[in-house]
Image 1 (spheres, rainbow, N blue to C red):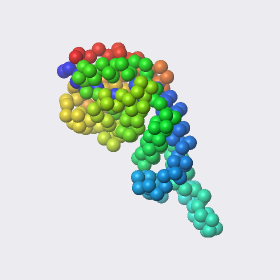
Image 2: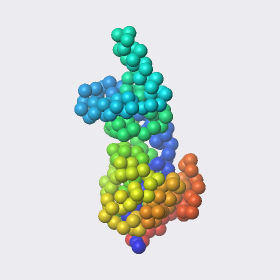
Image 3: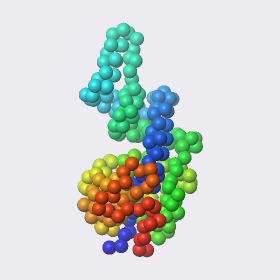
Length: 248
C-alpha cells in the first residue's frame, strides 16, 4: 500500500533530545513556584493543584510521605505547613515521574515562555523543508509524543523556522495509550480512519518501533546524532527525514 499518513515522534526524531532535557524541563522547574503563586485562584490552575494534592495524599513513596509528615508536624506548631504541593511537583520533576496534572502545568508554563520568546524550539535542519514537502504532496502528518498535545503544539508553533503547527492534522499523546503498547497504534489508526498499513511511524525508540510494527505500520528508526539509543534492531534507520523516499 502507498503511505498516506506519517506519524512522527518528536524527541530524537524531529527535535534534539537535549532541548527537552536541558531547556524545557529546567525552565518549567525554575518557573513552577512563581507561576503557581502568580496564577493562584484561577480555575484552570486550581483544578490542577487539586489533582496534584490528591496524588500526593495517595503517594506511598518515602519522599512523598516525608512531605506529608512535615505538614503534620508544622500544623501542630500553628505555623502552617512548610511543605506544599509545589514541593511535591518539584519532587516528581526530579524523579522524572509522569503525572497528568504536572504535564498540563508544565504546558501552561511553557506557553508563557514561548509567548515571551524566552523559549524557541530548535528542529533538526532537514525537518522544516521535508514537512513542507510532505504536506504539499498531500501526506497527512500526525504527532505522537509522550509530551502533552499542548506541549507538542507549542513546540511546532514556536520553532526556529516559525509556526509549523498548521502542517499537522492529528496530535496524540499518552492519553491514547502508552507508546510501547501495540493497542495504542491501532487506536491511532482508527482515530485517523486509515488502515495501519498506510501509516509510516518514525521514532528513535526501538520499543515504540516494535509496537507500531506489530500494529501493521511501516516503521523507520530515527538515528540522530545525540540520541541516547542508537540500536535500530531489525528496522531500517535514517539520519534525516530527507532520506525517506515516499511515493506521491
